[in-house]
Amino acid sequence: MLTVPEEAVAPLLGWYGANKRSLPWRDNPTPYRVWISEIMLQQTRVEAVKPYYRRFMAELPDVESLAAVDDDRLMKLWEGLGYYSRARNLKKAARLVVDEYGGVFPHSRGELLKLPGVGDYTAGAVASIAMNLPEPAVDGNVLRVVSRLTGSREDIAKPQTKQAFSDALRKIYPPGRCGDFTQALMELGATVCLPNGEPMCLVCPWRGLCVACREGSTDEIPVKAAKKARSIEEKTVFLLRCGEKAAFRRRPRAGLLAGMWELPNVEGVLPAAQASAQAAQWGAEPLCAVPAGKAVHVFTHKEWHMQGFRIECGREAEAFAWMTRSEFEAALALPSAFRGFLDFLWRGR
Image 1: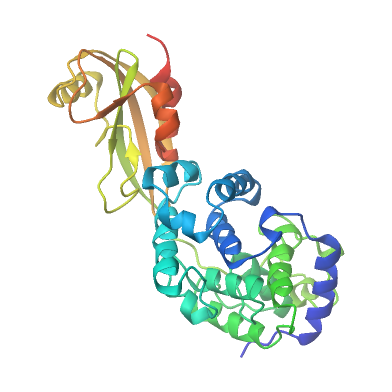
Image 2: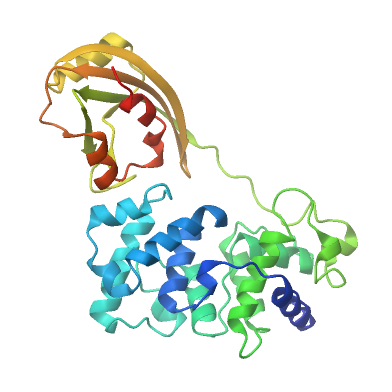
């Protein structure tokens, strides 16, 4: 059974008080503010999240405003963060909080887990940081620092390992400082006990307690099984222009990037002649087709390898929404997968 030494608490809290970063979501840590920040921070770097968080809070400062926001406006606020299902789940959860809980976040980890898009980590973060409950938020940072502290060689990719770490940490949560303890664990992993490169053991508050540091095994711990290779999908992306307008369409309501706007595309890599034929099939009356660059976009389990063609068209095919650049930039959120083609799309003739 994994045990985290209770004597690790005091030096970590002392270090955190002296070294914590100033982050916008740490000011006034209400359940709503903490929840939004934690969802944004999933799969995204802290520095990248800061401006998004500030803009989001300025426009949607509370759960009621999020529950009522137009879907396209929500996606525009989220544009560039990726993993758009997070934003859709935010709105679903906000509606549930408003409709079922009267706009007040449920005050327990179990109830928080009932909200769409809220898993063990997010529930623990909100419960501890915003509600001062002894509920761990165990992510990659926490798994790494606790693995090294205890010398654990359990595979951190296994759910049972994460549960064991949560159970062990819950036993040492300091009453009255649960939020600080959760954030201190996160901070240590983000700034000292680093995931890539050498950990900064000389400035670590756990230097005298850490088994991996003492044994010189920080390069071996944590242990994590290799991920499966991602599948590769090839696509041809169409940059259709008719005068000053360009063509966009919505993706299906289910599946990858569900309901998002996209540039028209088809499976496979087409030569220019076939790309023109496809545009004609859509009713766009293609005049000429020129290569518009290549792009690769990496999702969690797959990669898109894309070839673009810019095609001048003689008419606006009814299959698409046609917009000027200013109309597009004001209203539509385009997934990052397609944003690499925008320079080609808006170039003059």
